[in-house]
Image (cartoon, rainbow, N blue to C red; front, side):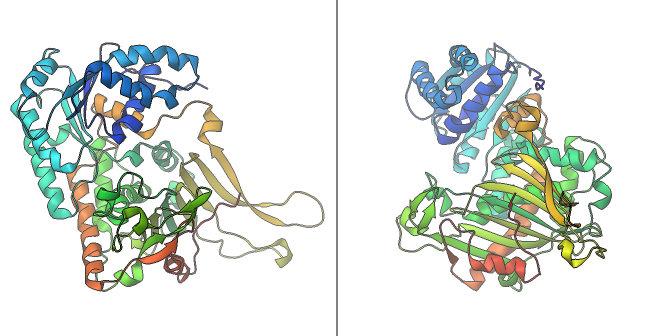
Length: 492
């Protein structure tokens, strides 16, 4: 089976922070993949912008090195590399100074009113300067679009400052707030599973769903993000955006149509329906953790403080939360969220745990009747598993087994599944904001997260330690087990 690739219109894509880790590790490899698949027109341009003084050829050499692992020994990709690199240009610009901006603007404007995408892969502190100068030089008009990377602020107040600044230069319809988790194949397949199959949607409510688990686990530590991460922590870095967006996709009502604002309206309703967590119940409903030295990825790893190079930090590297959506569909159904660094394995998944059958007709010798589960795996191997009870084959009486119907996307379709950034970048070029966050979504998410942050400050409790390579602090296990439930472990 082959995937259908639909070319986009000709565009100029400018990456501010074009020499940074995100650009070289995700954005440019993603764009190369789209070019190799024939989706990017030949006369499109990709321009890196950073403070470093270097020539176009210097930049192309740097990108060529970054693409080595993507190309590998694949002849079809090797043949596409040279023409892709020819599309790349570079401009040395300081976002805080006017020097060089006029020449930069003139170069872009020579191509008329073609699609112009400005990707702000920089510190949020530069968003205001960049957008102000884009507006001053007339680059915010026509088919211009701006992409904003997280974090969008550290709380509601700082998010409003960023949104106001970007909004003063670009209309809301031009602003694409990116969350790459929404570009993952499984997240979009969740929409198809729910709304294109009569099997699931009638059961997608508190009458049949016992609880939902959302896990985003990483085995890595700080890597190159120590400065940012210690001022952020897992709640701001992961929960406020990634996990809450996944929660919205699971729990939202069916939109009237697969249109951007219809989908985002339903997600907004979920965020506004989240039961508040504050100082009165934060200790019972949330768990903070920080990893200590242990073993991960097959070797010994240092603790968070050692990696950070400090003797003390109250920043959490792990969070578990019991959340509830107070509406008719989900009343009484807990949503257990957990995310952390240096955990046992790298996995992102959504588990919809259905209620058990009301009565078992089988003899005890048949074994226990386990509740059904729908498991959507986002990474590392994207796919869907539906856990069912069946009879164990063979003679000698009836014995029950809990087994999954397993669909791996890679095995089922046999094609390269585009990385999330590949899909989202092409959506920006198309002007399709369905998988991007609207301003009111960001504000609603912060409105729920802010009281949790305030509660932690009031409680003044240090994050609970956990050993690197484990599944987090024991308090996270207690959080779900005191409700008579357990975290999902895929034994198959």
